[in-house]
Image 1 (spheres, rainbow, N blue to C red):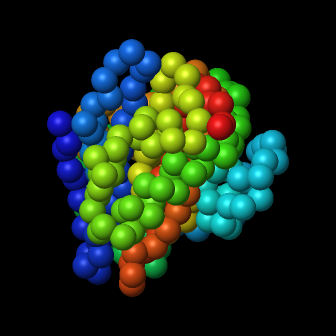
Image 2 (cartoon, rainbow, N blue to C red):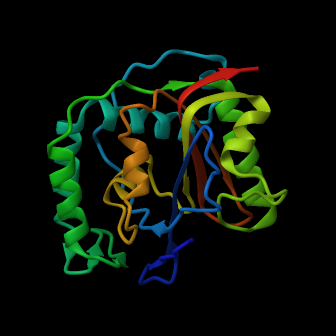
Length: 244
């Protein structure tokens, strides 16, 4: 079942992102194991340094898409460096509120307990292999982004009834397991990833699990904007993927 959580900005703008869904071959993908969580984003001077394989899809990505992909890989490959980013971000908390230097305030579901749990989780992590980009996974992510933009709907189920695994199958073949994360309102890639790691309000921490799944080796990313709205993005993950 889908559990929704919207964190409301004091200025009146909702800041949300969609949690993850995963499935294994031979098992029916859940309709949506998603939950909305804080997309807690702020610019950072720390830039990811992960080197990834250059593919046709990487060359075609927008600036935001490249930065989000690099940021995910940076968190995977350098968890102890990312720990510092989380500890720095924790200073913005006042109980259940996140106070940004520019004056914005987010009211969270779990408060500081969620980021403390995230810090403990990341502190125990060992570096993981960076994800490789797959053309078909980028295309599958883009199909869903375009659907979310045109339909105005939320969630992992497409307007045509498709689930993430079915969209991945249109452009190739995924192996063993897949996952999908959706960011609805982005400020920067750094804080999109921080928000997914904290995973406030998501009982199974699905965003975090997808980001740091050791078995996941490949990914796709796409972004778009609804008319007059903020950037939203879709990230697909898989253990393996063969493009058509």
